[in-house]
Length: 114
Image (tube, rainbow, N blue to C red; front, side):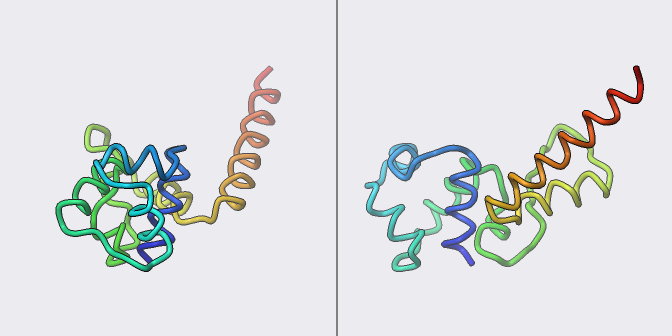
């Protein structure tokens, strides 16, 4: 669970393994090993990863399906939280489809208002 979530979240943030490693003061190889499930970060690194990737540690390690720290300054209703959590749990190809569909729907709504 952790390797997949780490890779998905890193890609979502548009970070390379090298960039993420640099932010954590680690080698690129460390991130590669985490994403392949060959190694696991220590608690200090896990905390930093959760901060950088803007999620809870529980989400990152698979203890919770709730993304956690969606945005501490904004109150989302349950539907908004559900959409964000669902989107963040999708594989990358499905995220692209989800966004394309949302843009199509918004475009249709905009045209109907005119």
